[in-house]
Image (cartoon, rainbow, N blue to C red):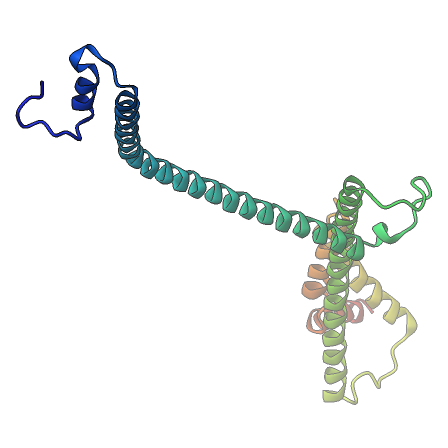
Length: 243
């Protein structure tokens, strides 16, 4: 018996028909079973497809994130590699420049043969050459200081001689009277004695530099033409009075 409202195409209805009247219709049973399995398979595929759509979107998002992370790491790795290569190139150029500038790096060292100089040897040779330059600079500065003192002494002597010449030109007839050699010697001895006394009191021999400075100061103070002229006049007067 069929229920009201049931469609003859319903597979369960056909199954009921197949078992009605205590008899089994194989054709109807097979067809009903086949249609039922098709419907259940379609429902299963639909539910599977529906459930897999969101998962596909999540997987795409995860894939893009992983790709972005990998590309970012690759860019950082390439940038680090380029920076490291630039640093090594700069160091290499620096060592090449040192070997070109430092003369001792260009000389042949028989202990190492014709092999290329190591960085440690280049640095050591550079340090030794810089120390040598510092010593040479100090030596040249001392020589320049000595030459400056010599120039100063020559200038003082030049000024003194110019003043002597000028004093003689102002009094061209001075000294025409004949003076005995003994008087000249006595006057010279008196002048030298006074100069030696002032020299002995002014000079210090603690060092060469101090001696040079004292000599220059003594010459500038006690060897001026005016001072010597006063001394000679004084001694001449004394000797003339004694005569």
